[in-house]
Image 1 (tube, one colour):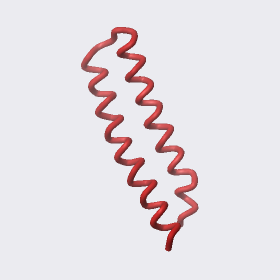
Image 2 (cartoon, one colour):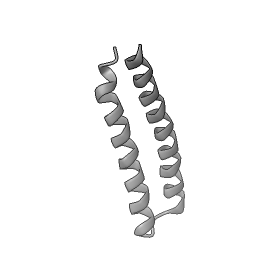
Image 3 (cartoon, helix red, strand yellow):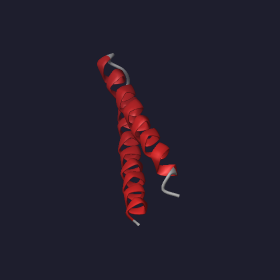
Length: 63
């Protein structure tokens, strides 16, 4: 079961990075403030998910 976290954690981190870069790109090009706000909310949610996935993987690996 812990093996699934070997690929799930990097996928979660890449998703966070992608949304972060999309939000920064939107801000740098002067895009909609509403879109930037939405992307940053998605980033926070994905960060939460990534932390949960990593912590679950560490917990399962230690058992």
